[in-house]
Each structure stands twice: as structure tokens, then as C-alpha cells.
Amino acid sequence: MTKDKVLIFDTTLRDGEQSPGATMTHDEKLEIAELLDEMGVDIIEAGFPIASEGDFRAVSDIAARAKSSTICGLARANYKDIDRCWDAVKQAKSPRIHTFIGTSPLHRAIPNLTMDEMAERIHDTVTHARNLCDNVQWSPMDATRTEEDYLRRVVEIAIKAGATTINIPDTVGYTAPVESADLIRMLINEVPGADEVIFATHCHNDLGMATANSLAAVEGGARQIECTINGLGERAGNTALEEVVMALKVRGDIMPFETSIDTRKIMNISRRVATVSGFAVQFNKAIVGKNAFAHESGIHQDGMLKNRETFEVMKPEDVGLSGTSLPLGKHSGRAALRAKLTELGFDLADNQLNDVFVRFKDLADRKKEVFDDDLMALVTQNDAEDDRLKLKSLRVVCGTQGPQTADMVLEVDGADIATTATGDGPVDATFNAVKAIFTHRARLQLYQVSAVTEGTDAQATVTVRMEEEGRIATGQSADTDTVVASAKAYINALNRLLVRREQSEPGYDIKGVSYKDT
Ligand code: KIV
Ligand code: ZN
Image 1 (cartoon, rainbow, N blue to C red):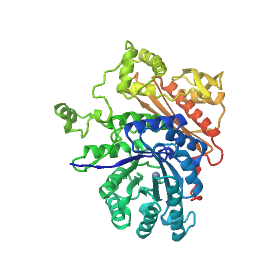
Image 2: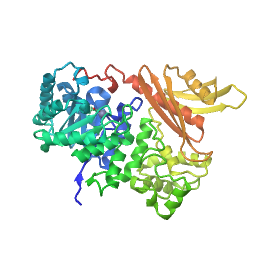
Image 3: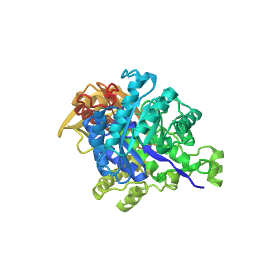
Image 4: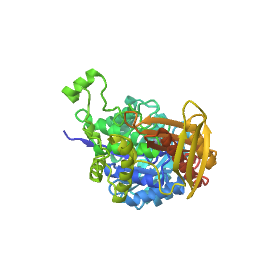
């Protein structure tokens, strides 16, 4: 059976990064872009260049490094945004400008444009983008709540002005599968010139239908799906890349479409995005959740032993999970560690391997068996060389006889500072010690602990989200000692907030970019 190609457009670094608290550092963005490129993503939306110097630099560095993927930047419907976007993407082997404007009645009211004025703006800005770049994507934001007549009219204008991809966003996650397919089909059938462009679908997950809506749009004629790793994104997130790609692969007999994604790289990038964004993947999440291939009930286990297809529609190996997982222990050497890390998708330089080896030995001393998940947690620790705050030591006294006390040494800008603090429990005492050494006004928004593997010696992964004057940062860390993991996660979040504080010249924050300039 011949299969139609569906392009995968990943917007983890733009729409995904817009989720509150999911901000990534420059190096993390470059790393994720490299993983997306390696896994076969056709188009990477690397950021919103006008939003800040940081976003501009990330998009242009990603553009300069990309090997195969097209690199795209987002721009509102004005010349300044579009010029800035072009400056950021132009060094890519294959650059794309993505410009958008909200076309529904609610969104038209914000820049206070009449239908005719907006139509003229679309014509002018798409023409301008096309004069700079051969590859232009145009999106009518909130398309699914835009009057159909007007949608047909503006899509036709964008095509005539030179757009090569027309993206139809369900910005508020309002549509449903049948409508999603019908809308794309209607546009393809009724808009003059529609057969010369690619239609894309961009779905949000407010009603939990994003993946279903994206797949339905493909049935309706869309040939580009916009998505993010783990479904990261504002509010309930976006269509998850791993879900649409695996659905197309598993259901290939019924849905004759293919993508160029190497699905064996899914698990690794999912874990990496979870770590750098601080958004842990829920256990029962399709494809990438911890339980996605776990079988607990007797009937299921029995069925699996007889024939795995009884309770699995895909193999764990298809998404990069190794079928059999032999744990490493304290006698395992560097070669065994390297082999295991390669199997898990990590290609470390010698100095990185040395560093991980030291931490692996330390963990193996404390824990009898080191499982794949332990190693992943170890390798993806967030500590960075240039962090301003580093935990040097921590001793906590806790138990039934309070008050709980934390003795801490913290390195602040290169100088060691010691303190003792008390608190309502060991974690509270630890956080109070950090506050005593490094005074700050950030408020704790989320504190979450989960076990990486099983057993009382399991590593705990702790996620901490903090907020300071509207800026949000998330930190994460793993350790067999839950309090140490908590201290490191808290310090990690603070380090990220400090970076955000430095970057917070007016207009820095992508969430602070308004649509008034559209
Ligand atoms: O959801 C949306 O409408 C968007 C646009 C900018 C394409 O992300
Ligand atoms: Zn979106």
C-alpha cells in the first residue's frame, strides 16, 4: 500500500516552552533541537525571535546547527516581527517564517481591526515574509472559532500572497474529531489554490481531544501535524508528538500515512524534555508514561506471557525501551556503563562519561541494583557549571523529637556559606536553610516527590516550582535521599529564577509578548 507522507512539525521549543514554568536554558534548547533533528522531525519551531534576545539567540543558534530539519521561527503579523524572525532563521539550510494573526471575532477585537483591515494586513505581511523567504507558513489563530466565510477568504489571501503552508490552529482546544476533519476538507475543496499548499493541523488539548483532532485532520487532508514532546504546552498542552507518530505507525493498515520519525528515539527525548522542562510525565500517559508497558493484573500477565499482542498494540522496543533490562551494580565498570548508556540513547563524550561514572559508583554504593531509570535520572541531572548556587553539604536531624534541623553549606557565587536552620519537618528545615543563606522572595508553588524505581533504596525525583514577580522556574533532582533531592531541586529552581531575573528586561518573557502589535 502506498502511504502519504505526513510532515511532523515540532513546537516544543516555542508553544511547549510557553507553559508556565517550562522555561529552558539556552543550552537545553540546543540539546533538545539536536535530539529532534536526529529523530527525524521535519520542521522544528525553535522559538519566537522578537520575544527576547534570548529567544533570538536560541533560534539563530539552532538554525546554524540544524542538520536535516527545517528551522522555523514565529512572528506576529507585522514587518518588525517578520524581519527579526528572518534574521534568526536565515542561516538554516532550510529556513521557514511562520506568521500568524487571530482571525476569530474575539481575536479581531484585540488589535481592533475590521475584517477588511485584517485581510489587508494578512496580504501585506505574508507578501513581506515571502519576499524574504521561500518557505512561509501562515496561521489564522483561533481558526476553529472563526466564521467559515471569513476563514475561506483569509486563507485564499494568504495563499495568493505566497504562503506555502496553511496551518489551521484549534487554539483553545474546542473542536472535535469529525469537525476537525470536515474543516480541513472544506478548506481544501473550496479555497482556490488550496491544492498548491500544505495544510497543517495545530491542536490544543483543553478537552483532551488534541491527538484525536490532529489525526482526524489528517483524514481530512492535512499533511503536517504540529505537536510537542510529551504534549507540553500552555494550559492542557498540545498534541503529543509520540502519540500521533505511534498512532500512524500502529494503525498503518487503516490509516495509510507515514512519518520520517525514528520512533526508537521517543523515550529518550521524552525523558530529556521532562527533565529540562520540569514537567514530569504522568505514569499513565500514552506511549511515554512509566506504566505504558506495565502489566499488573494476573490475567494480563498471563496473556502477555503467552502472546504479548494480547495486551500490547506496540512493542516497548519500538519507542526505545529495552525489552530486557539487566541492572548494573557496584562492580560494573566504565565499559558496561558506556554500553548501557548507548543503549539508552546517550552518546557521552569521555569527560561526561567520567563524571557520570563517579556519580554512578556513588549511587551503586548506596543502592544494590542500578536500573535504567536510575541511570536516566543520574545522567539528566540539571546541575550546570555556571550555577550561582551549589549545594556543598547537608546534614539533617529529624524524627519524632522536633524541631527538625538542617546544617547546610551552600556555595554562593564561589564562596562557601554555612548555616543551621529549623523547620516543620526536614524538608522545611532544609528550605529554610537555603533562604537563610540566600535571601529571596520567591514563593514555592509546587513540591512533588516520585520514586524513580521500586524499593526503599529507590532514588526519589523531586520537582520544585517557584514564582518570583510573575517569573516561574522549575527545578528537578534525584537522589536516594529524598531530603538531598529536595534541597538540590529547590536550588536548581532558584538558579533558574536567577537566570530569568537577569533576562527580565521589558519584553523578555514570551508570555509577556502581547498581540497588540499584530
Ligand atoms: O495555538 C495557536 O493558535 C498557536 C499559533 C501561534 C499558531 O500556537
Ligand atoms: Zn498553539
